Image (cartoon, rainbow, N blue to C red; front, top):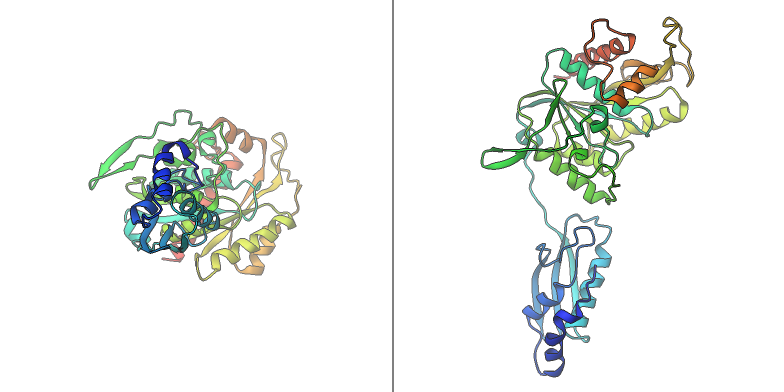
Length: 375
């Protein structure tokens, strides 16, 4: 945003005003633009290297404003602030031309960036509140129980839940050197390597980020974490369809996506939109299958009874209609909710397997089968 630092520049401005015969110079333009901040980063455009190709011809001034993304929502504001700064600190009669552009950065292919990650599984949902994070966490634990090397990344940057669901209160992230670069080291718990934006921010403060900022933070989290050897990297996606999903699709070598839903019609409608998103030519990620969460309620005292509170077999019918496998049905039981709150996923090893843990084990088994089919 536009910084009116009058005190700092009063003497310089007075000199330019008195010495009316002075021509506009490139240095004057650079000093004026140092007053303009990027609204998100809070640093001046000149400090961030976003001003390029300054040209001065008499009273005509032109330069490039290099944006982080062509779709920057604040580009008009920044352009206006640049013009106002030149009129304020240089000459109000200057003719200013601001060329909005963005720097194209050639990114390496995902498989080149993550050579030691064999399979990446996205766990997504069309809407919030369907238990996507619960499914992602327990799927990762069940995959680890097979002896596989598993990682879990919390890509829901606005509402990270992995710290709570794994009961991680010490959020100190350490760095390690590889090939001359420092990477973040994931936290290991229950034989799963974990990384979450929740480890890096104050858990009591809301993250008020625009889309480009959230996408940038997530990309940094993905590319600056040293995962080592990983058989399955499970990604807990944010709900819906948007910038975050596109960022992940373009950054990670994705094997396939799992879409979580409840049996309700309103939730199933969002599942269809989720499938369409992954099948979009710009994303083109195979959908491994559906998971019907809260499929039925089973009381602890009546383990053989099933009560279909949210409807019956909604995902099963949709699976047949769309030709996409139903990977699992997860019951609605109190122990699953409690396990998420106390940081001990219900899929963990126990002397006596429960129907809930077995449901997630079947989900892991079916997921592996679907991945093998697509090799």
